Amino acid sequence: MRTLAIQRKAVKRSTGTDAPRRASRRGKGRAPLSKEQILRAATLVADRDGLGAVTMRRLGQELGVEAMSLYHHVTNKEEVVAGMLELLVSELPAPDAGDWKATIRARALAAREHLRPHAWAFRLIANAEGVNLMKHHDAVVASLRAGGLSRQLTHTAMHVLGNRTFGFSEDLFLGDDHGHRRVQEILREVRQGKYPAIAEALQGVHHDDDLEFIFALDLILDGLERARDGEARDARTTSPVRDA
Image (tube, rainbow, N blue to C red):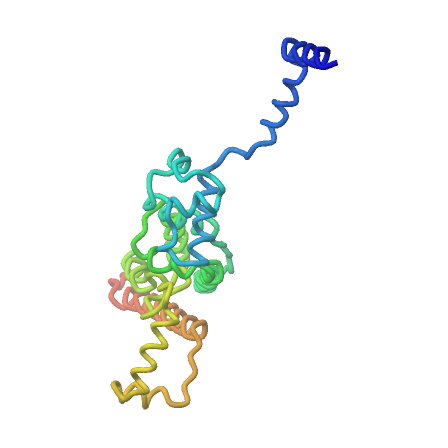
């Protein structure tokens, strides 16, 4: 009986009877890794534990692969971070509210909501480069020009608006993974009397990030509209009078 069993196994090996079974097991392996998978995994890590936690080793653990296999898709952490930003910006909503002011306002608020879960991204965007970042700027410039702003005023507007077109401003704590802790430390110093003017001014005050952002954005947009109208008036008053 034992000899017969050995002979059957030999026949299977020679005819390849069990080859499909082995191929089937191989076919059930992990799908090929992609750069987008790496970037999305990195984004999840940064959202949970801060940008400092994004390492090639950690990403390998998150994806269930050896860290070395990541280098087939990305060169280093710097490329990962740049790709994370580009991916986030590529997914920014692009509402069109009709009027130029309303459209820029809607874009900024939509971007704010989109980026809100990714506090690590805010300060990085300020100095980042990329096709999707430029496309976003291009769309804002197009809205300003469609609203009748001169080229010079559009230039000024882009500098004044700055990162507000991405839904945030250069706040003291915004974009810091440990911003809440820093705020608590400073408030503790204020209560200790180190900054008396700030302590007095904070009495009865409540803080609302969203309200303050919208307030500043509307001030800028209203100011740009007045500046546009002022330029138009100046152009009319300085234009030469034609003979009847």
